[in-house]
Length: 246
Image 1 (cartoon, rainbow, N blue to C red):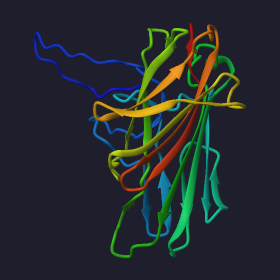
Image 2 (cartoon, rainbow, N blue to C red):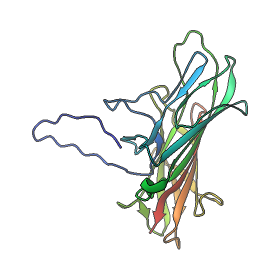
Image 3 (spheres, helix red, strand yellow):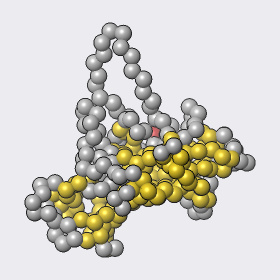
């Protein structure tokens, strides 16, 4: 996880939270901490390079051994490109079409022994795109989900009913999401084979999901979120072992 180089005056204090909430892919930041583009179209090329993971304030980068990722791009339901890395550049036709971009990330091997949360993610974005000969760069409307948890320092939740997870979405330098208009959250104790839908509601100007982990002590929780913003752009994300139940 990275943070910009900062200069402090004598006596100055700064408060930050590191590794808060569910860690998942997010929009990249430049060296000053300013949003950078995560996905754009230039001519008939679509380039995508999100941050490997983030906590809403900081950006994590792929750590080399033990960090894996790949991408698949579909056009009108057919795969037209893939990348063996969690970033890529894809050649696309000029005509307008419906696209679907999927990003997979994972931790494995020796380094993963010390990383027991967010062990895998799958994030899928549907969008439409066409060549605009008058635009040098067209931002791709990617939404990045963020999840605020009632967690402890080990990213665990108590075995109780009625706990609330706050869901928000950020974008990147090429797209700033509208307000969320539809939010779904589901959880799984078996790695995504079966799901339980959470009750979601708008509260205090935001969205929350209510989860029931009563009698689930020791279980590992996988989350699936479906978010749509006011512009009609959407994202589906699965986070394996987002947190544990204590």
